[in-house]
Length: 93
Image 1 (cartoon, rainbow, N blue to C red):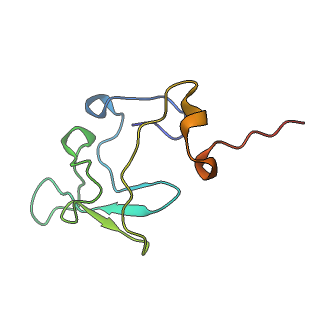
Image 2 (image 1 turned 45 degrees about the horizontal axis):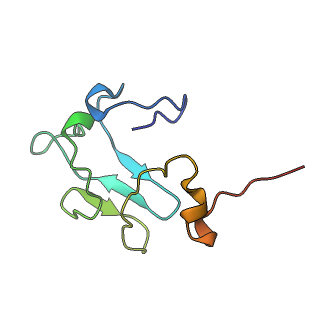
């Protein structure tokens, strides 16, 4: 996971959070349905999460678009292999 305030990456087992309530990207927003105990208000620890966003028992997509598979960032120099609509935009001033 990437901590959004600092940009620092963490392994899920080392994440500095007690639970996850939601995740999002440019295409959708998913509510976490994973609770550690029945009738609990707590959320699952990051290390225990089912990370497959298509698992409707673990995540609820809140926008109408179906969950898109989460892809790892391309390796350096791989941007040219991405479809044109997905290439990063660079402002040259």
